[in-house]
Image 1 (cartoon, rainbow, N blue to C red):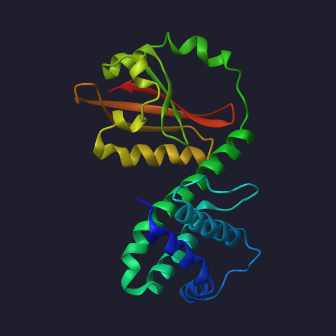
Image 2: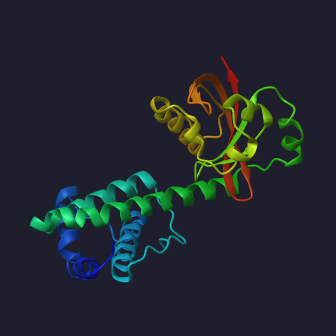
Image 3: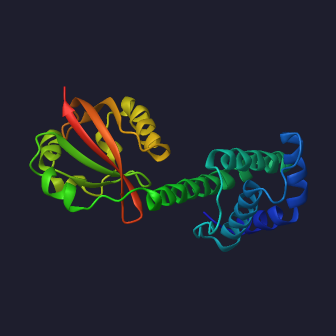
Length: 238
């Protein structure tokens, strides 16, 4: 919950900015150039965190015009948070509990921005090229939003395979229907589509409505539609 302490931490972040950045520079073996895109991302995260704590709400991070590598930026944000936590001394754990969810939201927004950029550049395929066929094929078809992880389309074969209705699939997190010990591999395969348009083929273990495992071979391709990127997965039971 946000409260007076959050406001105090907001002021602390602003007032100790220089000290935190000196500590970060020592951790990194030298300060990044002020003009580096990642340094600009760090400045925006600092403003985002201070504002969220001061106002008691998490507005969307301001990422307009920002072009950074999410992995390098995530490492920089983590280093900044650790430097701030160390500087907070005995109160570091309290600050960590506030900063970590804010940093996670900022990183997620950066990844979502990259997905949107790639979707805008990816070649478009006419919608009529896929819609007319998916309801008639025997294999399960699932369309997954690569940013949110939600199912945005499915065919009757997918509903039958999982023992649910198509309406129960649409809008649900795709990982809800993946067995827990297979979710890491599932996530890794879909994340590869963000980086490359190359089709992926892999095996997965899904769960039907009765929590029974269903082993499948999955062939997944990337598809851009209306400025979002989808993973189009065809799953065949083994």
